[in-house]
Amino acid sequence: MQKAEFVVGLEEGLHMRPAALLSRAAMRFRSSVTLQMRGARYNGKSALELLGMCALKGSEVQLMTDGEDEQAAFDTLTALLADLGVYKK
Amino acid sequence: MRFQELLNENAMQMKMRAADKEDVLRQLCALLYADGCIASASLFYEAIRNREACGMTAIGGMIAIPHGCSDTVLRSCVAVARLEKSVMWDAAAQQSVRAVLLFAIQADQSGLQLRAMAATARFLGQDEYQKRLLRCRTKRQLCRLMEEMPLGELDARLRLVAVTACPAGVAHTYISKECLVQAALARRHSIKVETQGAIGTENRLTEGEIRAADVVILAADTEVEDMERFEGKRIVRVPTAVVVRSADLLIEKIEARMGKCRGMSCE
Image 1 (cartoon, rainbow over the protein chains, first blue to last red):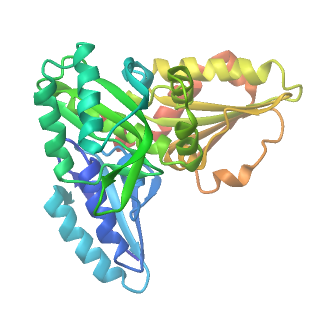
Image 2: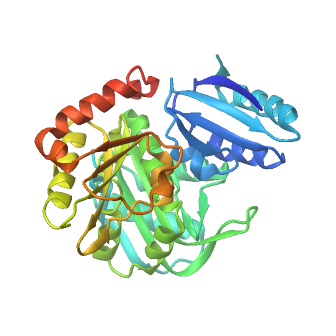
């Protein structure tokens, strides 16, 4: 399993568009993709779950990928998150 | 703030006839303008059209949640359209819709926008509520449905869910529910309480609510049903007497335990 901590830097928080982009990218991998915030886990392949997290600016989230292509998924999603304004701690 | 305070009955239309998506948005803008929520229908229409250009506001279940955070919004609210016939919303994603919730948020409240949309996603992301939304025929039914959303959703510091139960299932089950709700809301946490009383289970917690909860409170003097739902969650178990006597203290203890819980700063 790959995992790392991130901080939401987006002014508006992780809103609908980044949530949709992230889930779409996550869906391309076989590995499970999970985001964790305050102990609660959310399916990274579901835009609605990611939006429902309500990750406001400054929130700390953990990205976890688990499965056969976990490294590729982790690298791709880490890069995408950075583009979206969610930075690795 | 309660989500329900964002609902605006004057900006709801239950049997909207609309030719296409643009028509739906225009009609909703007109309703918002007529009710004085926006200063300019055309400016707000433009704002949400720009947002729609990025796509992805259809959330499945024939529901879309377009939104705009703009200077032209004078009073934040949610406008709702139930369409007589479905319209194509997102051709790329092949999503047509029959219900539209349009979020109009004041420019200085962008945090409110994410909170309101997140609350909506958690609520309407669930099959059960999607289906019930599409079955609503009147404004009253719609408002009643939205009342089932957990209380205090919008400013939640912690998301709490609870189950109350007592042997007789008459008094303590419901008194402890009231105490928990009061104490949680006073400390700005969201809460939804399922009661397992003599008349059966009411206000049943959904899978999504449990998943998103930071803490599960079991205020029970008997066995709680369906415990397997809470596997892997942080659980706080107390007798109802403790809740009735000192729900405030209980909530404070939970805060302390979640403690340095980073999310508490989620202002």
